Image (cartoon, rainbow, N blue to C red; front, top):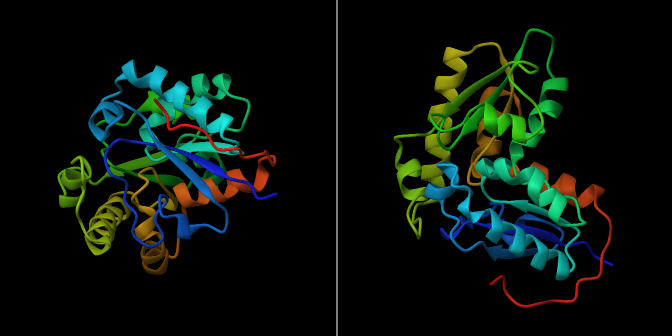
Length: 235
């Protein structure tokens, strides 16, 4: 029986360009998506915990629908990781930030893991701790795309921007990070839109890139097979 990945989505329309996390054709396995009421780029990036109950309800609905594992499409949801993992009986990894410890094991001693995020001014130790690590344990360098066209448009209810714009803004932020932090030897992309730029960044930098697509594939690989029996949309 085929395994299905559950995606907890923001209410902002997801990016579905070829290669995106929320494009079903990105994966060789099925995905089941549900938008979480009240969860938007703004509320999640600002750390609004009023939507936690809605995330739990939707995660339980996905579990009831037979998914084998659950993730989300915003790395800032790491703040909800422990409570959602405790609320369901399938593997949960809400944020690609959980890949940072793995990335750290792949680089030489004295090197850093670079984190490219939607908004570096909003990301900090509480997000790292919720994902299971701290900057005291792992040397990281963080940069974001804040102020860019992609940053602005992704916050809109219906982001309408070409894949090329996302790739360009991610590349600009990556170059800036590497110029500032030449010891970065691997990159983790926090934002679910950034996998669109992963191959371009790999080609230019020759670095390992871990992102939401990496996380999704890993989750399905290690998750159990469950019956999928369909259900109502998340209320």
